[in-house]
Structure formats: C-alpha cells, structure tokens
Length: 237
Image (cartoon, rainbow, N blue to C red; front, top):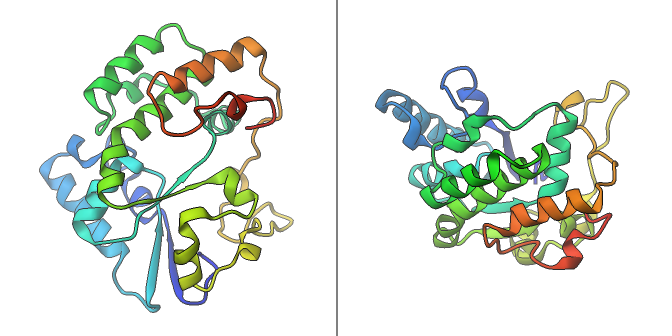
C-alpha cells in the first residue's frame, strides 16, 4: 500500500508523536489525562489530513487505539495478524523483554488483565509476550468487528493470498505481485526507512515443552486465529 501511486502513506504518526510525551505510548486513550487525550485526538485527526492523494494509509502498531481512530475519521480498518510466536521471538531478539507495565496497560479488558496476571509469575518471557498479544487481540476483538475490519494474516500475505482485502488492494492498484518485501540497501535501511530495527525472527527452534507453553498461553484467551495444532508445528513461526 505504501508504494501505491495513489496513496499517501504515513508510518506510525501517532505512536511516534506519543513516545516520550505520555507514560505509555502503546496504551489506549483511557489511560491519559484529559489534556493528553485531546492531544491524541488532534494527532489522529492530523494523520488523515493534508492529503495529496485520494487515499491516506496510516500504519500504526497499537490496536488498543482503534476507538480513537474511529472517532476521528471513518477509516477502513485492516487488522494485520502475524503468528504470536514469531512476534515474540522478534521482540526477544531485539531485547524487548516483557515488563509488568503490560499488565496495567490502558485498553486491556478486565478479564484479560486477570488472565495475564495469573500467567505472569510462572511463564517464560516468550509465553508472557504471547499471552499479552492474545490479551490485546481479545480486548479489541468486538471493536474490530463493529468497525467492519478486514483481517489479513501475515503468513497468507507471504503466500500471495490477501483474502478479504482483495477488493481494497485492487482499488489501490495493488496486485499480489506487489507483496514482496521492500529492497534493503547496504546500510540495512529498507524502503520505509526502518533501518536496523527491522530484524529477522530468531531461527532458534523451541523445545517441545517451550512450544506447548506458548501455545497454551495463546489458546487460554480463546483466540479466533492459530487455534489448530498445525498452526504450532515447527516452522510455522
């Protein structure tokens, strides 16, 4: 979508604005002061303004903010899933270890918060992260459904299957041949300027016991994805 000639692409404008300005840039607006909430709403509105192309694509990584985006505009929401173990391994490879702040993050539902707490003291780092990702998805599931969100799975995209997003991609002049990863130059900076922060998922193969632990952490939240045994075979992540 970022490479479509009829798209204005904005990468994490709200998240980047919030970093260093609020105590938890990844939390929902319910955890902010009234002044911070007003500032957030201004930034969300600005993310869709001053367009030079017919369509603005805003990429954010904070699903807990979906309500704030829906209040500021009427966007088509696309929810991109990736296998939770792959995401957890990427976080750990970057040194992004789970911390207790995740238990109190604004926007996590009360039920999900209680479940996270019960898993937190005994689980591995990977299991804690997987459980947190499950808690986020469970907390926003109803909001995504009410918004008519299109859900796309990363693994399907890699295979060239854009599923329910086909009509949306077609309207932007995007075909499956455009889904290949952007080129990376000699300084390890990709087409979106991400640079060294774009790391590959760890190739370490988890032990059967570790794999079972993270699978149970995910399934405890009754997710709608990665529910089958085949989704957790080695190589899936």
